[in-house]
Length: 468
Image (cartoon, rainbow, N blue to C red; front, side, top):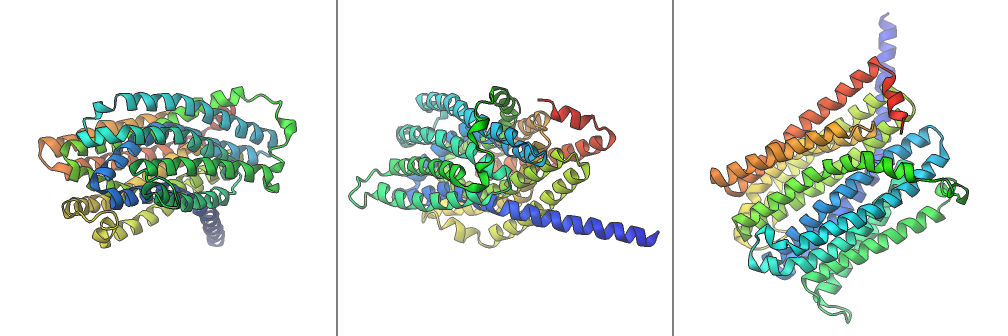
């Protein structure tokens, strides 16, 4: 009896080690790609801050934030495709993988069209955000260029769902790193006007982002259609198969998934607007601190994507044990990683802030915000991974309500109350954000384990999940 239990424990431990290894191998390229993606924004902000000062940093910050809020629905919505492809791969359904890839591209087109219109409406009514006169004057053109570039972001995200879903996550990583390098070069050339190009100032950073995103889409599509690893999934014989049903399904589960992302990003972006109400120093300080927090968030989001793919594979194999184990491993990994990031932020707070700007008034505020940013690392990481693994089992509706409540029912009202009513200034707004992230993390992880326990009691879950 004891020997049997020991053997079972040994097998379980070996399974967890194997799952951890597979998740890390899958997640590392995604994390690097996510880091590279956010580093484009970080590079823009550092270069704009150094070249153009706090007004330029404020313009880039609020324009990028609003544009990204709008884009977040499409980015989050398209992220559901990779777990679906992983599931189809586990079922050895090659034609379904092909249809999902083509449906994803169509969904990206429609997201680009609809969200692009919304973006330009926001630009037309930009004064509603009640920023300073200089920021109001300079933001619309910058934001317009970014909104156009978002169309290519959607196409890139849709394209990379194929490589990510087939566990070849290094493809997007390599292309994103190349994009980061090009973005840095284009920034320097276009902002200051080197190599015979005109000095475009602030708008040069936006044009740089647009050019880089176009090149990334082209590179991704060329690789997918040329590499042997993907050829069997992209054969022309599958093209006559309709994809309208899958486009509808991607929107059905993708829009709630995108809204999850939207509610969080919108809350943080509205915090940017509130910082603008407090003053230009607070706005610039917030932009620095949130940029640094975004770096670790996007890496944690990479773990969430990997966890969702692994859970999606378990769903395809109809293995409740694998679903649970993949979720456990993803949450454990992100908890460990974000704890380390918390220590880094505490130890190197001033050094990191001074990479952005030399204005002492801004630095003092930003260093204070960094302490709160460090504290909410753990909650932020857990909630984004919990969303990823819930996406892997196609659970999107209840998590959408959870994120709406956490950010718009807790984070923003509390942040406004502390920041403005209790006069806690920028610190109060950030305490509210921390409370929302913590609420989201607790409710989403509870939701995942509740659903796993339901799966153990009924095979009906798999029957329902397979009906499209």
